[in-house]
Amino acid sequence: MDTWQRRTLIYVVVLVGVMLGYAAAYDAGMSLFEGSPISFLHALQVVVETFTTTGYGSDAPWSSAAMNLFVIAMDLSGVVLIFLALPVLVFPLFEEAMSTTVPTAADEDLSDHVVVCTLTPRGETLVDELDSWDVEHLILEPDRERARDRYEEGYDVVHADPQSVDGLEAASLSTAQALVADDTDPVNTSIVLTAEEVAPDVRTVSVVDDPDRERYHRLAGADDVLSPRALLGEGLAAKVTTGISTELGEAIEIGEDFEVAELPVHRGSDLVGRTIAESGIREQSGANVVGAWFRGEFESPPAPDAVIDGGTVLLVSGRETQLERLKDMTLSDVRSLGRGRTVVVGHGEVGGTVADALSAADIAHVVMDRAEDPTVDVVGDATDPEALVRAGIEDAGTLILALPDDTLTEFAILVARDLNPSVELIARAEETENVQKMYRAGADYVLSLATVSGRMLASTILEDEEVISLDKQVEVIRTHAPGLVGRTLGEADVRARTGCTVVGVERDGEMVTDLGPAFRIEEGDELVIAGTDAGTNSFTETMGSRSD
Image (cartoon, rainbow, N blue to C red; front, side, top):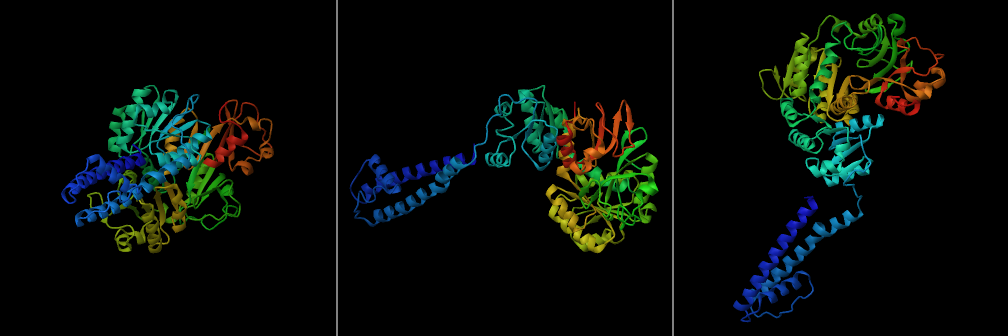
């Protein structure tokens, strides 16, 4: 039942109860104090006239003080109750009449779509991905006001309960390709159980907040169960575990002995303070810089005068030996010698995953949390300078903030940066919109849970498409581009028009990586492009479809 309907029912019940009570009291009072018995119906008529202000004083005057006081009380309370009807009944009716009408059922011809049950921040990233792949989708929202807000924002929304058979049928689940349950764990399992009843053949993907409950999502019938917080923890830890050694770590193989990799530049590296042109990356390593993240903003290609600082992340392509040489250039002398412990602040699911990864890599670290636990080394608040000092922030090499509260994380970044200006600071963000604030506060690298989760969902649903992600922020994708056939890369000006870089072209089963402005795209060529979500989306929109 909607909030407005519930309020209306309560108001009507209270109003009728009060009026009947007043009628009974008035009937008794007229007999007891006035000596003028009347019928209950007459008494109810007097009360109704009083409450509606249509018949004040029809029985006046009253000779007894008790009846006069009673009538005064009835007059005042009646006016109050009638005026209460304005905000409870009248105003909502006008608001509903003037507000946007949200659909309660999907179009009859909708098919092969993805049903997203409630839209969270991670769901927004998922929807963006589905849009970029031209995959139809539908948001199922049980709350009327949230459904209206989403509808007015331009989302395809149906106002219905995803836990009910009627709700999933309203979303045409039987003709959908997949369902995403993205609410609390109990609600998600309920949605999956209902989906099994409505359309057992449709694939269901459930998001689990507590990994210990994954079993129950699968018992409910979920085909895929995703734990985004664990993935976020692995991503944060990877910034330390891959940076502590000169080994290349994870890279994307484009062709035989040719790869694309994301390499963070660490504080203390000889590259820090130099521009892209001055860095000598191409000359010393042989690798090509495809793009770069500067304080969370991706540039492709980066401007020659862009300055590299601690925390800049380079997207590079080249042969494995070339990338390994560049990897060595990105490391600092301190880190290459293994000095400087890592401080992990926050020991929830994300922080616990980080600590486990560091232990597995045999990297010295200290765990700090507000709650006492055998696995916590220092008990304290991340915003308390003294607590951070006890954790060893002043001589730490890296600080990882794995806090679930973005506001506290932002403040903790300021405190930590003040205590140790040279520490490499890696942070977790709950909301994507807070990422830039964390960079402004002094973070070197920030991963957003919403972005990681959304991209994780997209990769699961779009498993038939070849999508390769680097840390869930930069995409490397393979695609056919009919719009480029017969044109050279110089004529197409892909970088300027889309912000993407063509790093390879597969032709007749062989990968061509030596690409220049004169390279001409032929029919059947499969391009490998690198860029942000927006860039790859722009490429597919302007250069052609991602699939034949």
